[in-house]
Length: 386
Ligand code: EMZ
Image 1 (cartoon, rainbow, N blue to C red):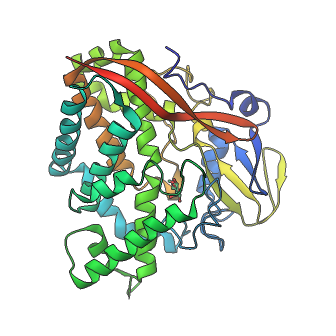
Image 2: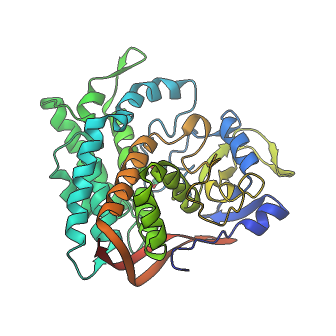
Protein backbone atom coordinates (compact mmCIF):
# COMPACT_ATOMS: atom_id res chain seq x y z
CA UNK A 1 0.00 0.00 0.00
CA UNK A 2 2.93 2.33 -0.18
CA UNK A 3 3.31 3.07 -3.88
CA UNK A 4 0.24 5.29 -3.95
CA UNK A 5 1.11 6.92 -0.66
CA UNK A 6 2.29 10.49 -0.77
CA UNK A 7 3.63 11.41 2.62
CA UNK A 8 3.88 15.09 3.44
CA UNK A 9 7.46 16.40 3.56
CA UNK A 10 6.29 19.71 5.05
CA UNK A 11 4.63 18.51 8.29
CA UNK A 12 7.49 19.25 10.66
CA UNK A 13 8.39 22.67 9.25
CA UNK A 14 4.72 23.63 9.00
CA UNK A 15 4.21 22.96 12.68
CA UNK A 16 7.56 24.32 13.92
CA UNK A 17 7.96 27.52 11.94
CA UNK A 18 5.32 27.72 9.21
CA UNK A 19 7.70 28.24 6.30
CA UNK A 20 10.60 26.76 4.38
CA UNK A 21 13.39 28.24 2.29
CA UNK A 22 14.38 27.37 -1.22
CA UNK A 23 17.05 28.73 -3.52
CA UNK A 24 15.66 28.65 -7.02
CA UNK A 25 18.28 29.77 -9.57
CA UNK A 26 19.74 32.27 -7.09
CA UNK A 27 16.33 33.82 -6.63
CA UNK A 28 15.25 32.57 -3.17
CA UNK A 29 11.70 31.62 -2.31
CA UNK A 30 10.14 31.62 1.13
CA UNK A 31 7.59 28.81 1.05
CA UNK A 32 4.45 29.41 3.16
CA UNK A 33 3.19 26.14 4.61
CA UNK A 34 0.11 26.83 6.75
CA UNK A 35 -3.37 26.91 5.28
CA UNK A 36 -4.22 30.13 7.10
CA UNK A 37 -1.14 31.98 5.80
CA UNK A 38 -1.53 30.57 2.30
CA UNK A 39 -5.15 31.76 2.11
CA UNK A 40 -4.39 35.15 3.60
CA UNK A 41 -1.54 35.83 1.20
CA UNK A 42 -3.47 34.56 -1.81
CA UNK A 43 -6.17 37.12 -1.01
CA UNK A 44 -3.71 39.93 -0.52
CA UNK A 45 -2.76 40.48 -4.17
CA UNK A 46 -1.52 44.02 -3.50
CA UNK A 47 1.37 42.77 -1.37
CA UNK A 48 1.74 39.34 -2.95
CA UNK A 49 1.74 40.09 -6.63
CA UNK A 50 1.29 37.80 -9.63
CA UNK A 51 1.61 40.39 -12.36
CA UNK A 52 5.01 41.90 -11.74
CA UNK A 53 7.35 43.18 -14.42
CA UNK A 54 9.38 40.00 -14.73
CA UNK A 55 7.24 37.58 -16.62
CA UNK A 56 7.54 33.97 -15.41
CA UNK A 57 9.06 34.83 -12.03
CA UNK A 58 6.09 33.67 -9.97
CA UNK A 59 6.51 30.13 -11.24
CA UNK A 60 8.87 27.88 -9.28
CA UNK A 61 11.21 26.99 -10.93
CA UNK A 62 11.24 30.50 -12.33
CA UNK A 63 10.58 30.73 -16.06
CA UNK A 64 12.13 34.18 -16.59
CA UNK A 65 14.82 32.70 -18.84
CA UNK A 66 12.50 30.73 -21.08
CA UNK A 67 9.59 33.03 -21.74
CA UNK A 68 8.77 36.68 -22.09
CA UNK A 69 5.10 36.36 -22.89
CA UNK A 70 2.81 37.07 -19.99
CA UNK A 71 0.35 34.28 -19.28
CA UNK A 72 -3.19 35.67 -19.00
CA UNK A 73 -5.03 35.98 -16.63
CA UNK A 74 -2.51 34.14 -14.42
CA UNK A 75 0.14 36.90 -14.47
CA UNK A 76 -2.16 39.92 -14.33
CA UNK A 77 -3.39 41.46 -11.08
CA UNK A 78 -6.65 43.25 -10.31
CA UNK A 79 -8.24 45.40 -11.55
CA UNK A 80 -7.07 44.40 -15.09
CA UNK A 81 -7.24 40.76 -14.08
CA UNK A 82 -11.05 40.89 -13.92
CA UNK A 83 -11.36 42.15 -17.50
CA UNK A 84 -9.53 39.10 -18.83
CA UNK A 85 -10.99 36.66 -16.36
CA UNK A 86 -14.57 37.72 -17.09
CA UNK A 87 -13.89 37.31 -20.77
CA UNK A 88 -12.58 33.74 -20.58
CA UNK A 89 -14.61 32.47 -17.61
CA UNK A 90 -17.77 31.44 -19.55
CA UNK A 91 -15.64 29.43 -22.00
CA UNK A 92 -13.94 27.59 -19.15
CA UNK A 93 -17.32 26.86 -17.50
CA UNK A 94 -18.49 24.86 -20.55
CA UNK A 95 -17.43 21.62 -18.82
CA UNK A 96 -20.59 22.00 -16.70
CA UNK A 97 -22.67 21.31 -19.82
CA UNK A 98 -24.04 17.83 -20.42
CA UNK A 99 -22.95 17.73 -24.09
CA UNK A 100 -19.39 18.65 -23.13
CA UNK A 101 -19.27 15.88 -20.54
CA UNK A 102 -20.58 13.39 -23.09
CA UNK A 103 -17.63 14.19 -25.32
CA UNK A 104 -15.24 13.63 -22.43
CA UNK A 105 -16.98 10.38 -21.59
CA UNK A 106 -16.50 9.12 -25.13
CA UNK A 107 -12.79 9.94 -25.00
CA UNK A 108 -12.34 8.22 -21.65
CA UNK A 109 -14.36 5.15 -22.67
CA UNK A 110 -12.30 4.59 -25.83
CA UNK A 111 -9.05 4.69 -23.86
CA UNK A 112 -10.39 2.46 -21.07
CA UNK A 113 -11.79 -0.12 -23.50
CA UNK A 114 -8.37 -0.29 -25.06
CA UNK A 115 -6.24 -0.53 -21.91
CA UNK A 116 -8.27 -3.38 -20.41
CA UNK A 117 -7.26 -5.57 -23.36
CA UNK A 118 -3.53 -5.09 -22.71
CA UNK A 119 -1.12 -7.08 -20.59
CA UNK A 120 0.75 -3.95 -19.51
CA UNK A 121 0.03 -0.25 -19.77
CA UNK A 122 2.37 2.59 -18.90
CA UNK A 123 -0.14 4.88 -17.24
CA UNK A 124 1.67 8.23 -17.62
CA UNK A 125 2.28 8.07 -21.37
CA UNK A 126 -0.37 5.60 -22.57
CA UNK A 127 -3.28 6.61 -20.37
CA UNK A 128 -3.03 9.95 -18.57
CA UNK A 129 -1.21 11.91 -21.29
CA UNK A 130 -3.50 10.50 -23.97
CA UNK A 131 -6.68 11.34 -22.05
CA UNK A 132 -5.39 14.79 -21.04
CA UNK A 133 -4.48 15.69 -24.63
CA UNK A 134 -7.67 14.37 -26.19
CA UNK A 135 -9.78 16.08 -23.51
CA UNK A 136 -7.99 19.34 -24.26
CA UNK A 137 -9.44 19.27 -27.79
CA UNK A 138 -12.86 19.51 -26.13
CA UNK A 139 -11.80 22.42 -23.95
CA UNK A 140 -10.33 24.26 -26.95
CA UNK A 141 -13.06 23.04 -29.31
CA UNK A 142 -10.42 22.09 -31.88
CA UNK A 143 -10.29 18.99 -34.11
CA UNK A 144 -9.52 15.72 -32.33
CA UNK A 145 -6.49 15.09 -34.54
CA UNK A 146 -4.58 17.96 -32.90
CA UNK A 147 -4.21 15.76 -29.83
CA UNK A 148 -1.68 13.60 -31.73
CA UNK A 149 0.70 16.55 -31.93
CA UNK A 150 0.25 17.39 -28.25
CA UNK A 151 0.83 13.80 -27.15
CA UNK A 152 4.20 13.96 -28.93
CA UNK A 153 5.18 16.91 -26.74
CA UNK A 154 5.22 14.72 -23.63
CA UNK A 155 4.03 15.49 -20.14
CA UNK A 156 5.30 19.04 -19.74
CA UNK A 157 5.54 21.79 -22.32
CA UNK A 158 8.54 23.50 -20.70
CA UNK A 159 10.27 20.48 -19.16
CA UNK A 160 12.15 17.68 -20.86
CA UNK A 161 14.13 14.72 -19.65
CA UNK A 162 17.33 16.78 -19.62
CA UNK A 163 16.05 20.01 -18.22
CA UNK A 164 13.33 21.51 -16.05
CA UNK A 165 13.47 24.64 -18.17
CA UNK A 166 13.87 23.68 -21.80
CA UNK A 167 13.76 26.75 -24.05
CA UNK A 168 13.77 24.70 -27.29
CA UNK A 169 10.78 22.79 -26.11
CA UNK A 170 8.97 25.98 -25.13
CA UNK A 171 9.60 27.30 -28.65
CA UNK A 172 7.78 24.35 -30.18
CA UNK A 173 4.66 25.38 -28.24
CA UNK A 174 5.06 29.09 -29.07
CA UNK A 175 5.49 28.38 -32.81
CA UNK A 176 2.52 26.07 -32.77
CA UNK A 177 0.31 28.69 -31.11
CA UNK A 178 1.53 31.43 -33.50
CA UNK A 179 0.46 29.30 -36.45
CA UNK A 180 -2.91 28.57 -34.90
CA UNK A 181 -3.54 32.26 -34.28
CA UNK A 182 -2.61 33.10 -37.90
CA UNK A 183 -4.93 30.34 -39.08
CA UNK A 184 -7.97 31.73 -37.30
CA UNK A 185 -7.16 35.30 -38.30
CA UNK A 186 -7.66 34.07 -41.89
CA UNK A 187 -10.44 31.57 -41.21
CA UNK A 188 -12.15 31.86 -37.85
CA UNK A 189 -13.83 28.71 -36.50
CA UNK A 190 -15.66 27.94 -33.25
CA UNK A 191 -12.46 27.29 -31.31
CA UNK A 192 -10.91 29.16 -28.40
CA UNK A 193 -8.32 30.93 -30.58
CA UNK A 194 -11.10 32.33 -32.77
CA UNK A 195 -13.09 33.42 -29.75
CA UNK A 196 -10.07 35.26 -28.37
CA UNK A 197 -8.90 37.00 -31.56
CA UNK A 198 -12.41 38.36 -31.95
CA UNK A 199 -12.72 39.57 -28.37
CA UNK A 200 -12.28 42.98 -26.88
CA UNK A 201 -10.87 43.87 -23.51
CA UNK A 202 -11.67 47.36 -22.30
CA UNK A 203 -12.92 48.36 -25.72
CA UNK A 204 -9.73 47.22 -27.46
CA UNK A 205 -9.35 44.16 -29.63
CA UNK A 206 -7.12 41.57 -28.02
CA UNK A 207 -3.61 41.63 -29.44
CA UNK A 208 -1.91 38.53 -30.83
CA UNK A 209 0.42 38.62 -27.85
CA UNK A 210 -2.50 38.63 -25.40
CA UNK A 211 -4.19 35.75 -27.21
CA UNK A 212 -0.92 33.87 -27.10
CA UNK A 213 -0.68 34.54 -23.36
CA UNK A 214 -4.06 32.92 -22.72
CA UNK A 215 -3.24 29.97 -24.97
CA UNK A 216 0.16 29.26 -23.41
CA UNK A 217 -1.48 29.15 -20.01
CA UNK A 218 -4.19 26.84 -21.30
CA UNK A 219 -1.58 24.41 -22.63
CA UNK A 220 0.92 24.65 -19.77
CA UNK A 221 -1.20 25.05 -16.65
CA UNK A 222 -3.33 21.95 -16.97
CA UNK A 223 -0.83 19.52 -18.38
CA UNK A 224 1.51 17.86 -15.88
CA UNK A 225 -0.98 18.73 -13.15
CA UNK A 226 -3.86 16.82 -14.77
CA UNK A 227 -1.53 14.00 -15.81
CA UNK A 228 -0.28 13.63 -12.23
CA UNK A 229 -3.81 13.74 -10.83
CA UNK A 230 -4.94 10.95 -13.15
CA UNK A 231 -1.82 8.80 -12.66
CA UNK A 232 -1.83 9.16 -8.88
CA UNK A 233 -5.52 8.27 -8.77
CA UNK A 234 -4.82 5.09 -10.76
CA UNK A 235 -2.04 4.16 -8.29
CA UNK A 236 -4.47 4.80 -5.44
CA UNK A 237 -7.16 2.54 -6.92
CA UNK A 238 -4.55 -0.12 -7.67
CA UNK A 239 -3.77 -0.31 -3.98
CA UNK A 240 -7.39 0.15 -2.87
CA UNK A 241 -9.62 -2.17 -4.90
CA UNK A 242 -12.18 -1.89 -2.10
CA UNK A 243 -12.56 1.79 -3.02
CA UNK A 244 -13.32 0.86 -6.63
CA UNK A 245 -16.05 -1.47 -5.37
CA UNK A 246 -17.38 1.11 -2.93
CA UNK A 247 -17.72 3.81 -5.58
CA UNK A 248 -19.31 1.34 -7.98
CA UNK A 249 -21.92 0.61 -5.30
CA UNK A 250 -22.47 4.26 -4.54
CA UNK A 251 -21.61 6.44 -7.58
CA UNK A 252 -22.94 9.50 -5.75
CA UNK A 253 -19.69 9.38 -3.82
CA UNK A 254 -17.65 10.34 -6.86
CA UNK A 255 -17.78 14.09 -6.25
CA UNK A 256 -16.44 13.91 -2.70
CA UNK A 257 -14.00 11.13 -3.64
CA UNK A 258 -12.51 13.25 -6.42
CA UNK A 259 -12.13 16.28 -4.17
CA UNK A 260 -10.32 14.11 -1.63
CA UNK A 261 -7.93 12.65 -4.21
CA UNK A 262 -7.23 16.18 -5.44
CA UNK A 263 -6.58 17.35 -1.87
CA UNK A 264 -4.37 14.42 -1.02
CA UNK A 265 -2.30 14.46 -4.21
CA UNK A 266 -2.32 18.26 -4.71
CA UNK A 267 -0.93 18.14 -8.26
CA UNK A 268 0.50 21.67 -8.12
CA UNK A 269 2.88 21.86 -5.14
CA UNK A 270 3.08 25.62 -4.90
CA UNK A 271 2.90 28.89 -6.80
CA UNK A 272 4.97 31.98 -6.18
CA UNK A 273 4.22 35.63 -5.66
CA UNK A 274 6.49 38.68 -5.75
CA UNK A 275 6.32 40.83 -2.63
CA UNK A 276 5.65 44.47 -3.49
CA UNK A 277 6.60 46.02 -0.14
CA UNK A 278 8.63 45.06 2.91
CA UNK A 279 6.42 42.78 4.96
CA UNK A 280 6.45 39.95 7.44
CA UNK A 281 5.36 36.33 7.12
CA UNK A 282 5.56 33.81 9.98
CA UNK A 283 7.44 36.44 12.01
CA UNK A 284 10.10 36.64 9.30
CA UNK A 285 10.93 39.87 7.52
CA UNK A 286 10.39 39.61 3.77
CA UNK A 287 11.88 42.37 1.63
CA UNK A 288 10.14 44.10 -1.23
CA UNK A 289 10.85 42.42 -4.59
CA UNK A 290 11.68 39.07 -3.03
CA UNK A 291 9.62 35.96 -3.64
CA UNK A 292 7.32 33.84 -1.49
CA UNK A 293 5.35 30.81 -2.57
CA UNK A 294 1.97 29.57 -1.46
CA UNK A 295 2.32 25.87 -0.81
CA UNK A 296 -1.03 24.33 -1.67
CA UNK A 297 0.31 20.83 -1.05
CA UNK A 298 1.33 21.63 2.51
CA UNK A 299 -1.79 23.70 3.26
CA UNK A 300 -3.90 20.71 2.20
CA UNK A 301 -2.32 18.59 4.93
CA UNK A 302 -2.71 21.19 7.67
CA UNK A 303 -3.91 19.30 10.74
CA UNK A 304 -5.49 22.49 12.10
CA UNK A 305 -8.17 22.17 9.42
CA UNK A 306 -8.13 18.59 8.14
CA UNK A 307 -8.80 15.65 10.41
CA UNK A 308 -6.47 12.74 9.62
CA UNK A 309 -4.77 14.79 6.90
CA UNK A 310 -2.43 11.96 5.91
CA UNK A 311 -5.32 9.64 5.10
CA UNK A 312 -7.37 9.46 1.94
CA UNK A 313 -10.92 9.70 3.31
CA UNK A 314 -13.07 9.28 0.22
CA UNK A 315 -16.24 10.52 1.91
CA UNK A 316 -14.57 13.42 3.72
CA UNK A 317 -17.42 15.81 4.47
CA UNK A 318 -15.65 19.12 5.05
CA UNK A 319 -12.85 19.56 2.56
CA UNK A 320 -11.84 23.20 2.06
CA UNK A 321 -8.68 22.26 0.15
CA UNK A 322 -6.71 24.77 -1.92
CA UNK A 323 -5.38 22.39 -4.56
CA UNK A 324 -6.80 24.68 -7.26
CA UNK A 325 -5.38 27.76 -5.57
CA UNK A 326 -7.40 30.31 -3.67
CA UNK A 327 -8.72 33.85 -4.16
CA UNK A 328 -8.26 35.95 -7.29
CA UNK A 329 -6.17 33.46 -9.23
CA UNK A 330 -8.01 30.25 -8.46
CA UNK A 331 -7.64 27.74 -11.27
CA UNK A 332 -9.51 28.60 -14.46
CA UNK A 333 -9.29 24.99 -15.63
CA UNK A 334 -10.71 23.49 -12.44
CA UNK A 335 -14.18 22.86 -13.91
CA UNK A 336 -12.65 20.89 -16.78
CA UNK A 337 -10.25 18.99 -14.51
CA UNK A 338 -13.01 18.05 -12.08
CA UNK A 339 -15.39 16.91 -14.82
CA UNK A 340 -12.64 14.84 -16.42
CA UNK A 341 -11.63 13.15 -13.16
CA UNK A 342 -15.24 12.41 -12.25
CA UNK A 343 -15.79 10.79 -15.62
CA UNK A 344 -12.56 8.78 -15.47
CA UNK A 345 -13.41 7.38 -12.04
CA UNK A 346 -17.07 6.86 -12.96
CA UNK A 347 -16.14 4.82 -16.04
CA UNK A 348 -13.23 3.06 -14.35
CA UNK A 349 -15.42 1.50 -11.67
CA UNK A 350 -17.79 0.22 -14.35
CA UNK A 351 -15.07 -1.47 -16.40
CA UNK A 352 -12.20 -2.37 -14.09
CA UNK A 353 -12.21 -4.78 -11.18
CA UNK A 354 -8.66 -4.20 -10.02
CA UNK A 355 -5.34 -2.77 -11.13
CA UNK A 356 -1.94 -4.46 -10.59
CA UNK A 357 1.14 -2.30 -10.36
CA UNK A 358 3.94 -3.99 -12.31
CA UNK A 359 6.70 -1.37 -12.23
CA UNK A 360 7.00 2.17 -11.05
CA UNK A 361 9.40 5.09 -10.91
CA UNK A 362 8.54 8.03 -8.68
CA UNK A 363 8.75 11.64 -9.75
CA UNK A 364 10.34 13.60 -6.92
CA UNK A 365 10.32 17.40 -6.88
CA UNK A 366 13.37 18.98 -5.28
CA UNK A 367 12.55 22.04 -3.17
CA UNK A 368 15.94 22.09 -1.39
CA UNK A 369 14.69 21.77 2.19
CA UNK A 370 11.92 19.45 1.03
CA UNK A 371 11.72 16.61 -1.46
CA UNK A 372 8.18 15.96 -2.55
CA UNK A 373 6.78 13.10 -4.54
CA UNK A 374 4.40 14.63 -7.10
CA UNK A 375 3.63 11.52 -9.05
CA UNK A 376 5.38 9.04 -11.28
CA UNK A 377 7.82 9.27 -14.15
CA UNK A 378 6.49 5.90 -15.09
CA UNK A 379 3.80 3.57 -13.73
CA UNK A 380 3.33 0.25 -15.46
CA UNK A 381 0.10 -1.57 -14.60
CA UNK A 382 -2.31 -4.22 -15.69
CA UNK A 383 -5.97 -3.16 -15.71
CA UNK A 384 -8.10 -6.20 -14.85
CA UNK A 385 -11.45 -6.17 -16.58
CA UNK A 386 -14.61 -6.40 -14.53
C1 EMZ B 1 2.25 28.04 -15.62
C2 EMZ B 1 1.75 27.19 -14.50
C3 EMZ B 1 0.33 27.49 -14.19
C4 EMZ B 1 3.68 27.65 -15.95
C5 EMZ B 1 -1.34 26.74 -12.73
O1 EMZ B 1 -0.03 26.72 -13.09
O2 EMZ B 1 1.88 25.83 -14.85
C6 EMZ B 1 3.20 25.42 -15.07
O3 EMZ B 1 3.20 24.05 -15.38
C7 EMZ B 1 3.80 26.17 -16.23
O4 EMZ B 1 5.14 25.80 -16.40
O5 EMZ B 1 4.13 28.38 -17.07
O6 EMZ B 1 1.44 27.89 -16.74
